[in-house]
Amino acid sequence: MLLHSSPVDSFRLAGREIYVKRDDLLHHEFSGNKARKLKYFLAHDFPAIDTLISYGGTQSNLMYSLSALAKLKHWQFIYYTNQPSQMALTQSSGNLAEALANGMELKTVPNTLTDFVNQLTITENQLFVPQGGADEFAAYGVRELAAEIRAWAQSVNLAELAIYLPSGTGVTALYLQHFLPEYVVYTTNCVGSAEYLVKQWNQLDASLKRPIILENSSYRFATPHTKLWQTIQFIQYESNILFDLVYDPVGWEILLIHLDSILTPILYLHCGGLLGNSSMSQRYNYTLANSN
Ligand SMILES: *Cc1c(COP(=O)(O)O)cnc(C)c1O
Image 1 (cartoon, rainbow, N blue to C red):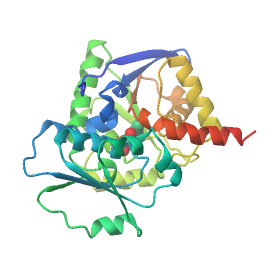
Image 2: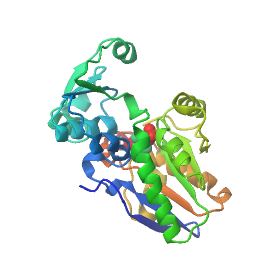
Image 3: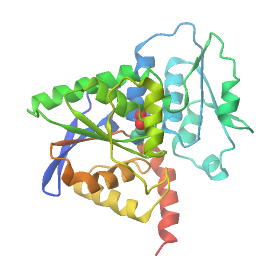
Image 4: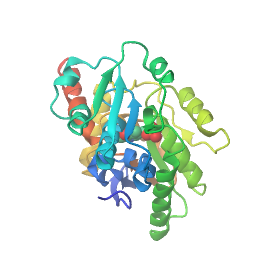
């Protein structure tokens, strides 16, 4: 099971070399970025735990990776969500279908998910992983990722480096900047506003140096857009690499806008998430068919 030491590829873009850290090539069950975030749980034993509990949307990459973790550890996995769409439930591939196949128990909550989860009592045999995996456990795997990036940059003699990735919770970007103080980490906000991202960082650890935000003020999370489709098709054609359809189209679109202002070599962190592409491409097909 490849859970670390992902390779770095490169391709030519606008007359320069762009490097891509291929975390998508980590073991598919731990889906890129989430392999890093869950590394702590994989690397340690939890003899008192027999049940994993989490919550969130049913398209979630983390949900799927947690189901793989629970299966590997022989834990029961309970996942709370609001009513999933009929379309999501009938899909035979994608995060939800694969998570259910791994034995996940989906529990539908009628009221606000966070209110419900806040009043849950977590017992000693249960491990609770918050939505997005936004907690200090993630630092463990991101530190390992940082060490790989440093070793690679030194091996190809890059003294300066801009590392870029699209953010959800921003946990990966923040810890990456923390563990790689000699380089600059850039990111863009895919889930909420740039202010939301800063708020997340302050909650996590306000004392840490922050990545630079290349602000996305145009694209809403997981919402198909013709321009984004064109951009990701272009990047996939130029790079010969398949990217995810939720984070990466926004990631690349925003990076392209700022490409000329970043003068150092750029390493794009491919965070995986390709399992979610089947449901996202259905939505893209619908959007593209109904636009002109
Ligand atoms: C989770 C995820 C991200 C964002 O990671 P955060 O640490 O939440 O910012 C980016 N890309 C993919 C494919 C992901 O699954």
